[in-house]
Image (cartoon, rainbow, N blue to C red):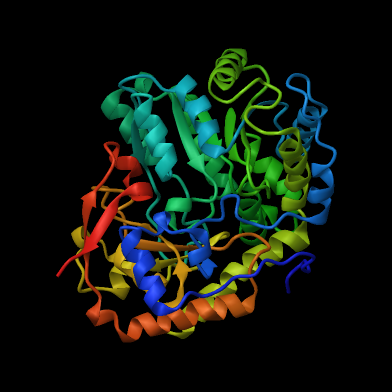
Length: 445
């Protein structure tokens, strides 16, 4: 059962089919280019798209908009220390701003950064800093409870190939967004800590979905059975030297983020702080208004409350069940923020170079006004990743009727799947790591 009720609503409307086809053509068959009012159920991302609580809305009115020394920043600092265990933070306007601040300080030309699996902006920021992102996911099967783990042996192999001195950081993303939102165990985080120590590298945790990961640990890792999500959340971050955080996920806000640096690492903190001033804003606002700082301070605490996080994860599982009932191949078990569809299995006649994931994304919009995102060959060119489509649920936003509409849309697409064309890219930006955000495509004959 949902752990909330609606106090404010927004009208949405499903455009007719002719309008949807026109919108899709005008968007260059890239759903990032669609206007929001042309979308009926928007599962593009959970980043900043959720609904805030009444306590967060009340906190907005307490925002201290001082340029320097804001009380709202002090409140966020206190919340981060209480919930996540980091007493020193560098605020940023959102997660990718925090990535720019941290990886620009950490990574130099010719260095390598292993990760359980890099997401798109993480990969792009490491490349932009002159580094080489290297994915090191653990091999797993559907019965494994922690399919998002880092393969620490692969990290050691990388170090032996390129030299430990060329690995400035080991990164673990919790949950593993690029691999179906699967969780990471605390045991694996300790193994990552050991590897980082051995390589004289820093351990960075991408903590965007730290609360969702903590929920899975409390449910699945024997040592933490019966522990509160709040206590697990602190434990899983306790071994990190630094965290990078998008408040638009488990901060439950519409904007904002930060870098957290462990006490004692003065050099990294000062480098990050100066980059924050250069790229984001002064150290006590960092691209956020005081009201946003206040909302995140409240949201971090709400994210680890048991009723909220349980209903959050259950809703994702509910969508997964509805899709399985209509024969959609999904990655199981479902993760904490999204259901991931195996587009390669759903559209086996479309080869990866013709973007089966994008073909499915376009068909979902055309058939039912549902916006999803491709996380396959288009988003990660040449990476040999599975051809996935992510259905990302905004927090505290949709209800069962919306989920049923998504399942019905998939069923309608399945009836016509053999008619669906592949796609080719006709225009893309110079940085291929970011091409899926703005590329234009056309259907193949």
